[in-house]
Image (cartoon, rainbow, N blue to C red):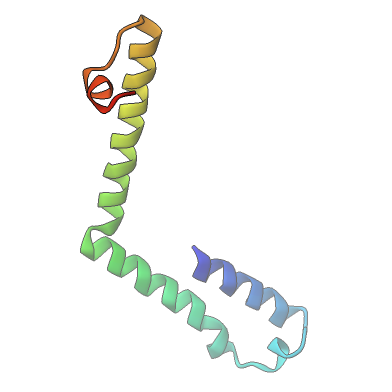
Amino acid sequence: MWFVSIGVVLLALKILDVAPVADWSWWALCVPFALAAAWWTFADASGLTQRNAMRQMDEKKAQRRARSMDALGQIDPKAKKKGK
């Protein structure tokens, strides 16, 4: 996402003729977008995106379970072992 944001800012500076970006070639402005595409390809191919999504889902599930246990007035056995 950072690469796309940088690319958009550089593109806006080029269109608005802000120096020194106004003097850069259009090919130089394509570099952040190409890096973003390369990163997304790597993240999808390596499974990084899926692992992060699964980790976030597991964290949300644990938080939901803890809230439910608190609402019912029950103590989570795992939390009891940890001393919480």
